[in-house]
Image 1 (cartoon, rainbow, N blue to C red):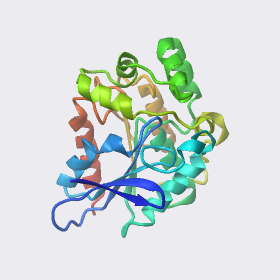
Image 2: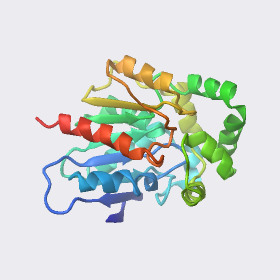
Image 3: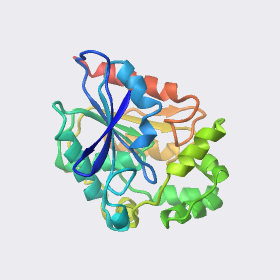
Length: 268
């Protein structure tokens, strides 16, 4: 069962396994334009059923968290502080799983804090967003323009959302619900991820790491996920025939299975 609490102004969702579990908690960090809600329908119930206590925060200015009025001035460093604030409330250090922008936040988190392990899912690479932005502009200029509209606070339509996030069939009701929950993103955070606050690879801690991408991802193309894997000296898992929203593609259990296998490998 999904529950929700407020931790110092941050919306935090929880989904706990039945009975006691010796498995480490998982903390999910969402991507741009989204919130903690993106994990509640698929990944959190799945991993809770497998024995992992699951938590997902909405970064400040997102979902039900504070800070919407100041969102354009929020930095990636602010988002790192949010993650740390939630980590500090847990009895055991969690495994961090970040999607898209959330993966970038996880990388910045490792500059300042240790982590048990991290999973980067369709993550913004440590080299930043510039290559992804140019690739999208050249391949899908209409989607590029629509994303900039969303960044400015304007809403897009379900057709554009489907083209940007999904490769397979999408249920109209789910797509409409996703569109309703989407929001604008911090202009400052986008600039941080583009060039002004990229991860300092020499300062980062290097815990066990999983890197996953999607073959038909339009926003963080597979070749950039491979670049991330090469940068960190890790193998790369590319999900066939899936788009950026791996949590809601119909084949999302394939992504969950890769993560679950990796989590099991962490157990001594």
